[in-house]
Image 1 (cartoon, helix red, strand yellow):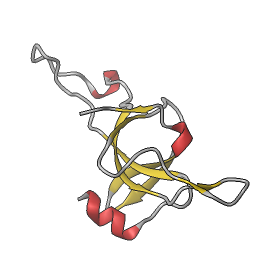
Image 2: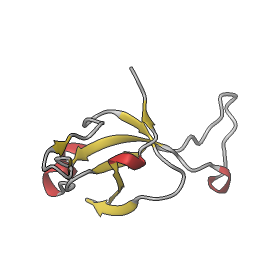
Image 3: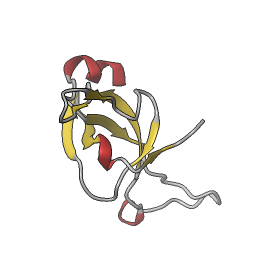
Length: 102
């Protein structure tokens, strides 16, 4: 699944490859939500991360998220990448708004 994509694509520098979570299609009360009414999913799972960005003095600044973590994405942005007929998105580490704690 996500491990397959990781073997075929590795982000560079401070980039993070994520897979958006599926949109909810049914409410808690059991009512089906039409596709046009479903909101944009802002939660995603980190699939792969780059090595980090270089600072002015040459040191590598590590990425703030790890593979497998759930993160909150901005509503707009990211670059869509299709790997094995699945949609993934690339974001800069600084663009990710936060991560969910277990």
